[in-house]
Length: 462
Image 1 (cartoon, rainbow, N blue to C red):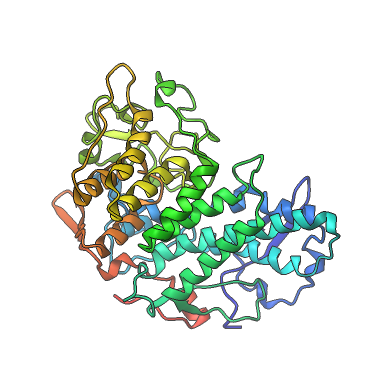
Image 2: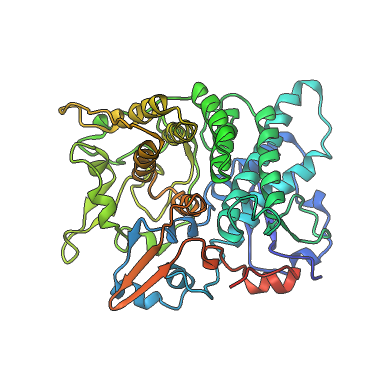
C-alpha cells in the first residue's frame, strides 16, 4: 500500500517494562494484525512504553548539530566518509540525503510510540482514581510527539514565517493507524500541531516528576518557549519561559565543577528540566570534531565554561579543542544533549526582553546566568548595553557560548537569518571551500526518496 510508510515490525517485550524495537521490515504495516495481541491494555503498561528511554529520549536527529558551525573536521578525517550521508551533509551538498538516524528514528520511535499509546488510551476504561495517571500518560505522549516533530521541522521544512506559512511543512503523523495516508501539511499547520500538543500537555502533565526523562508541566512550558522562539514569536516565548523559570530556576555554580571530575557534568543536574539526546554520530565524536577556533577564543579566560566545556587535543592536533561539556553526562559531543535546561530559559527571557526594548531587565537575566559560570577568584564584571542592538549582540553571543552542541545552533541560524543576520556558513577542506549562504534552499534537507515514492509526497526544492 502506498500510504504505508516509515514504520516497521514492532515487538513488545515485557521483562519489567515494555520495550519497543523497530526493525527494518517496511512491509510490516501491510499485514493486518490484532493490536490487542501486542499492545498493552493497562495504564501502567502504557506508561512503561513512554518510560523506555532508549526509544523516547535517545533518538533525536544528530543532523541538528552536524549541520552547524560549532565545529570543523580535517580533510583527512572527512575523506573516508565523503560519500556518506554525514560527509555530504557536512558540506551542505545539494543532493545529500538523511540516513535513518536523522529521518526514521524520530518517526519510528517517539512519534510512533506516542501515537500508538494515544490510540490505545481511547480504548482504556478508567475509574476516577486513575484520571491523574491517565492525564499524565496522555500529556507525555503529546509532549514527546511535539518534541520530535519540532526537531523534524528544523530540518525538513522552511523556518516559520508569515511568508513561509503556506509552504510545504513536515510529514505529520497523529495516529498509528496504517490506513491513514501520510501527507505533508503546510509550515503553519506543522507549528499549529506542535503548539497545540504542547499547550494541551501543559494542562495534563504533573507539576513534578521523579525522573527528568519524564516530561512535566514545566518541561512543556520550556518547550513552548523554545518553539515560539524558533517562530520569532517573542511575546509567547517570553511568557512560557518566564512561567517555566518560576517553577524551576536553579543554576549550577561552575566553580563546583573545577577541578574537573568524572562525569564532568552530572547527567540529571539541577538545571535539567527534561533530558533528551541524539543518537551518536561518528562525525561529532571528540576525536573527529574540533571546536570552531573563533568560538573557543570568544570565551573570557575567567569564564569557567572554557575549562568545563573544552579540552585540548593531543598531538598531532595540539592547539585544537574537543567539546567535553555535554549535559548527557558522558562528556562527549557524539551524544548531543538536546534537552531543556534552566540556562536556556534565562537566555530566552533575556533575548525576548531585549527585543521588547526592556534592556536593563534583559541584561539582569543574562548576568544572572553568567555569574554562575565565572571564576569566583576574579571579580565578575556585569555586561551592560546601551540599546537593543548592543544588548542583542551580547545576548546572542552568550547564547551560542552557553548552548553549543545542544542541537540548537542550526535552528538559531535559520531564525536569525530571517531577522537579517546574514550568517553564511563555511567549511574548508584542504583547498576546497564550501559555503551555505543565508536562506539557501539547502537549509531545508531533502526527504529520503523511498519516502517520496511510498507516500507520494512533495520533495523539497533544490
